[in-house]
Amino acid sequence: MKISVIGCGYLGAVHAASMAKLGHEVIGIDTDTARVAALNNGQAPFFEPGLPELLHEGLSSKKLSFSSTISDVQTAEVHFVCVGTPQKPGEYAADVQYVDAAFTALFPYMQAGSVAVGKSTVPVGTASRIAQLMVTQAPNSHLIWNPEFLREGHAVSDTLTPDRLVYGLSDELSAVPAAAKLDEVYAAALSAGTPRLQVNYATAELVKSAANSFLATKISFINAMAEVCEASGADVTALADAIGMDDRIGRKFLNAGIGFGGGCLPKDIRAFMARAGELGADQALTFLREVDAINMRRRSKVVERTRELCGGSLIGKRITVLGATFKPNSDDVRDSPALSIAAQLQLQGATVTVTDPQGLANARVRFPELKYEQDAMMACRNADAVLLLTEWPEFIALDPLAIGEIVASKTILDGRNALEPKKWTQHNWDYYALGRS
Ligand code: UDX
Image (cartoon, rainbow, N blue to C red; front, side, top):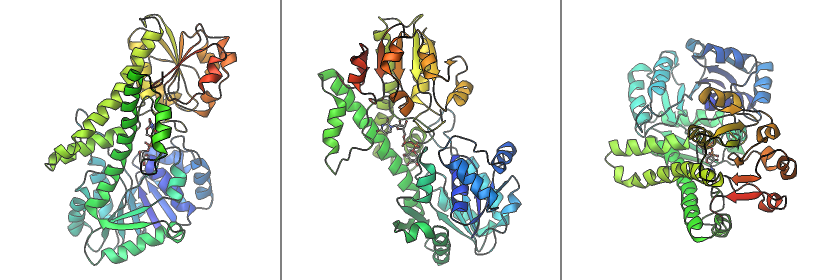
C-alpha cells in the first residue's frame, strides 16, 4: 500500500517508520526542511528507543522517504495526518490550525477513492467539520478518524502492536471501502487479533480525550491519597499495592510522586475541558480542574519539602536534580515536572544542577539559567540535597555509598517513590519520599 504521513513529529515520524516496517511504501511530509533532511539521513529528531533502527531499515529498503513537497503524496492511497495540536497560549483550548492546514494542503492531491486518516488528538467535532470540507475540496475521497494511543518511550511497539484500533467513520456508504483500505494498512495487527472498534467520528475523538483524562485522573487520585498519607502517617506505595490488587482498580498508573507532565496529558485534559465548555457540558468535566490542580500542587510541594530539608531556606543551597525529562526513556522536557521543580528551586535562591541521560539538550533550551551536568556522579558533587525527579534506571542503580562520599549532605528526596529506601538509609542517608512517612 502506498501511504503518506503528513507531519513528522513524535507521532508522524514513528508512524511513518513503523508503516514502512510493515511493508508499505511510505512518504513522510513535513514543512520543516531541516527535519526532513535529518530524517532522510536516518537521524531521528528525538530520542525514541527502536526508531533509529526502523528509519535505517526503511530508508535502506527504499520503502521510506521524507519530503517537504506536499504534491509528493499524490500517488498514495491512504494519507495519515499526524500534526500537533498544542495548547493555545493563554487558553485551555487546543490549537487546531496545523490540522486544518494539513488537510487543506492535502485535499488537492487526493485521488478518487483515497482515504484521509486523522490521527492527531483533536477537539470533538473536528472530524465532522473536516469531512464537510472534503465534500467540495476532495470529492470521492473519505475521512476516517483513527486516534493513536502511543506512549513515548514505547512508541514503536505501541504503533506496531497496538492494543486496539479505533476507526471513526461517517455513516456514508463510502465508509465501507475506506475502512477496508485501512484494514489493509493494519493487516498485520488485525491478523494478530487486535480488536478493531468502528464508531462514529465524535466517539473516536472522545475515546482519545477520555482515555487520557482517565489516566490523568488515576495519577492525581493516587497523588491526592499521597497528601492524605502524609497527613496521617500512612504509606501511599503500600496503599497503591493493596488497592491495585483489586482487578477493577489495577496497579498501573498508581505511582504517586511529582505527577504527570509531557506533551499530552496536561494539554489534553485542558483542551477537553475547553471543548466541553463550548458544548455546554462544562459541568461534566469540572473534576478535571481538580485533577490538574492536584497535579500542579505536587510540584510546589516538592519545592517546599526541599526548603524544609535545607533548614528553612533555599538561598545559597546546592541542589542536584536527577532527571530533566517528563519520564524515563525519552528526551522530551515539555511540561516536565522535574524541570519545572528545578527552575522553581533556582528562582528561590538555590543553585541547581540537573543531570539526565537524554534530556539535557532540550532542557538547556527551555531553562538556560540552570546548571547542567551529563555525569550523574559529577552532578552530585557538594550537593546539600539530591532530588530524584525522573526514574531513569541509571539513577535507581546509583551507588549510595559512592555518592555519599562526594555530597555535602546525605539527604535524598525520592520524588517518584522509585528508590529502595533501605539501600540508602543503610549508608546513613536521610531518605525522604512523597506520601510515605
Ligand atoms: C500519554 C498516554 O499514556 C498515551 O496513551 C497517549 O497517547 C499520550 O499521552 P505519554 O505522554 O508518553 O503518554 O506518557 P505516560 O506514560 O502516560 O506518562 C505521563 C506522565 O505521567 C509522566 O510524566 C509520568 O511520569 C506520569 N506518571 C505515569 C505518574 O506520575 N504516575 C504513574 O503511575 C504513571
